[in-house]
Length: 118
Picture 1 (cartoon, rainbow, N blue to C red):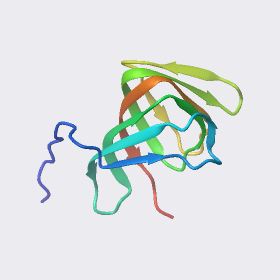
Picture 2 (cartoon, rainbow, N blue to C red):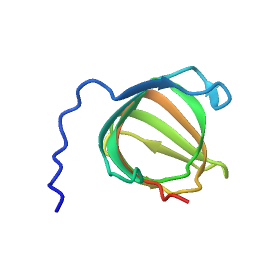
Picture 3 (cartoon, helix red, strand yellow):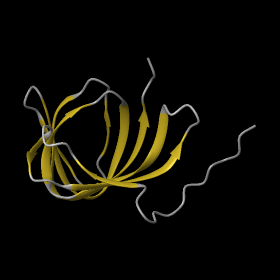
């Protein structure tokens, strides 16, 4: 039987990256990822994500639960509906969501991701 997995305090990021030019709409934000847990199959993950100011296209192939801890972001779907996300905002991004993510103030979020294979 698997043991309980306690989530550690955030230390050094697991990964830091910049988005490909074809996705970026404004800026070239550095993004940081802290992967706190990933199951053996690679379909379920928990962690933290941080981004500097910028705007880019998003196309979700996964289901994602998020809670914003710091900062301000605006997420706009392809129908033009904009959602303002700040500290305490808790939301789910469904698989298939397309639109833009704009970081107005550097943003830190906690996330849980499920991406079915196949």
